[in-house]
Length: 139
Ligand SMILES: [Zn+2]
Image 1 (cartoon, protein in one colour):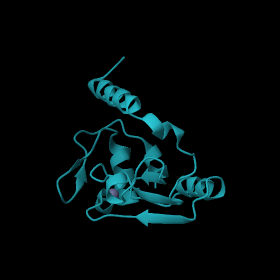
Image 2 (cartoon, helix red, strand yellow; image 1 turned 30 degrees about the vertical axis):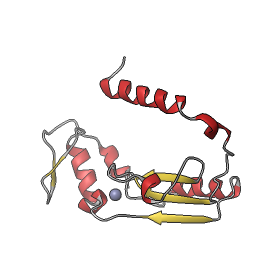
Image 3 (cartoon, protein in one colour; image 1 turned 90 degrees about the vertical axis):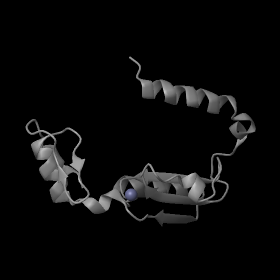
Image 4 (cartoon, protein in one colour; image 1 turned 60 degrees about the vertical axis):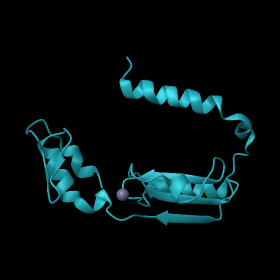
C-alpha cells in the first residue's frame, strides 16, 4: 500500500539518488570529524544551519536533542569507529519539548493515543478512551 507522502518521498529519493554522482565515493568517516546531536524539530535543517554537505558530519536527531542512551551509543560509535573528535549538542528556541512534562505526556497517553492538540498554553486530547499506560515509560 502506498500513500501520497510515501510516493513523494520515494520520488524525491529517486531524484536524489540519480544526482548523487561522485558522492557515492565518499569515505564512511565524516570528513569534518564531528557529530551534532540536535532536535528533530521539522523547522530545523542541520545541514543548512551548520553548513554541512554529504560526508561532512554525523547528525543525530531526537525530540529535544537529548543525550539519551541511544544518542550516546551512536556518539560513542561515531568517535570510536568513525573518528569524530568533537560533538556538538545544539538546541533551539521555541522547542516543542518546552511545552510539556513527562507527567503531561503520561496523562495524555493514559487517556487516548490520537494526536493531541496544543492551544498555545496547554495540551488536550480531542477524544477520550483507548489510552495506554505505556506512556509512563516514555521520558
Ligand atoms: Zn526542539
